[in-house]
Image (cartoon, rainbow, N blue to C red):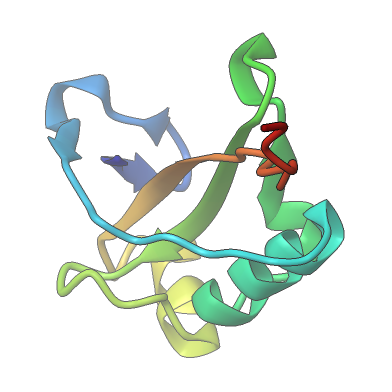
Length: 108
């Protein structure tokens, strides 16, 4: 799931602009940390943009990024223009669920 809201630098997120989109993105890893690292690499964010067990939901991982109107991660110059009121940016939250898969032997 992707959730976006227009973010005004002075006023914060504007709830009347919210949009939800279903997305089909999945990641895997041998460990929880490996899966998180793949999210970090894919979205081009640092670990501070990753929220584990978000909204008190075990296994929910949210990734938050600032995006431009084209849905691309905002670059430094766009962020500076946004801070000065010359650019519209959106706070995008990508919601993922972490599942643990264990292989067990079937007993015959």
